[in-house]
Amino acid sequence: AQSVTQLGSHVSVSEGALVLLRCNYSSSVPPYLFWYVQYPNQGLQLLLKYTSAATLVKGINGFEAEFKKSETSFHLTKPSAHMSDAAEYFCAVSENTGTASKLTFGTGTRLQVTL
Amino acid sequence: EPEVTQTPSHQVTQMGQEVILRCVPISNHLYFYWYRQILGQKVEFLVSFYNNEISEKSEIFDDQFSVERPDGSNFTLKIRSTKLEDSAMYFCASSVWPTPLGYTFGSGTRLTVV
Image 1 (spheres, rainbow over the protein chains, first blue to last red):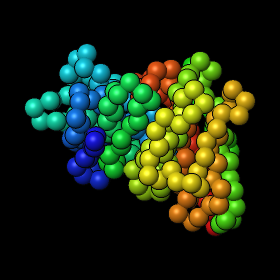
Image 2 (tube, one colour):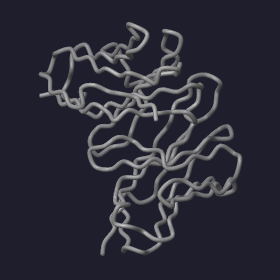
Image 3 (cartoon, each protein chain N blue to C red):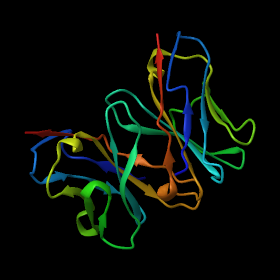
Image 4 (cartoon, each protein chain N blue to C red):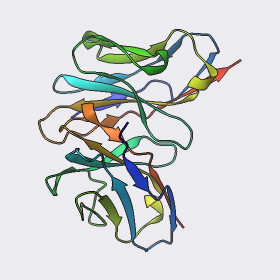
């Protein structure tokens, strides 16, 4: 069974500081990994996804994530936070079983950006 | 860019009433999904649907829930007798392939049961 653990339900950074949101996964087969962002009262927007093509994945809005198999991690980073990055971030994992595969989400990390 | 459309955006219903949440997936997509997010909690898988039948369902998706694709364009989630704990944001997603690599999520329907 697949699962995701997001360490830190709330993260606060200053504008311009490094953003680091942590995600560890568990999967019985090589996983697909995703980061989604959710702004208040809005839907889920895909930031980036790992498909085994490259371990460092670049996404939208300057975010990137690195897949580390030895650490079963897929942490999300951004070099310089912007006020507009304040949102809820969800890490998710999927196992490709050949049927209609589901996403399993983590509990989310709320990012606060302060002046 | 093609979108998954969900209607209504917000629905309020009385406990015990039936509700139908509607989704229009992207036209060439074949795989359809419902997820829900109780306020302040994580997004949870409910059900996947392909070729007019359920592929997989979670333990949340009990006999009170049903899905169908009534007319080849809409994909609906019905809750037969709503409970207070059904209050949540419900997201529809569709995909060309049987993998979330190609998911497109809708913007969600907020269901409030009073």
